Length: 243
Ligand SMILES: [Zn+2]
Image (cartoon, rainbow, N blue to C red):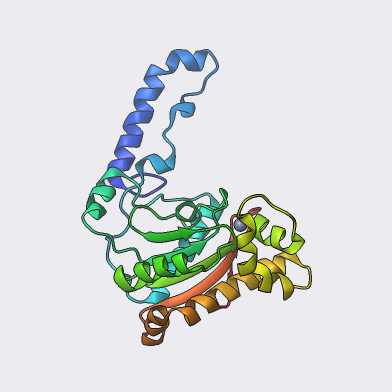
């Protein structure tokens, strides 16, 4: 049994690998390089944790996301569904259980932050996690067509798009076109960037509900739960925001 992901096969591979690495690396150990340096990282063998089927209800799907984030924060990632077997399984068709609107920031990789794998989450990312028409259309596809049970708006601390909007600074090219989407949150936050980041999550969730009858209909029917949160870059933890 794998100590990290609980997968019997993966555990056997890991033991075999460590055994061979220990033998092969014996000379290197003597030379000062520990055999453990050759251990495969957990994500290299993440086995299937769940079938590509919906959760019992949207609340259960949301709980699964928060449990994944908890594993990530504690350094106990399972890296579920992150191997070729899972990819082959979902290549024929995807049924992601959650759809995301997140920031394009390189420090906000949704699958890693929530410890998910191939076929689990349908992700849209754009600087400032703003709901522009192309994003709304994409999320309608993820929910109405693919059947995601959770629609999650994820902001994050130290968001450059929110900070730049608040500062109103001159920026090259079309970067400032993002400002129009974030300006309201910036105005309503009294100059506090963390408040603006949380308010931006609330506002973008409102826009998704109001601008998309398709999404609103699914929320009303109870087949879709809309939720939001702010991911703290210093701790890795996602703090829920009521939306
Ligand atoms: Zn950002």
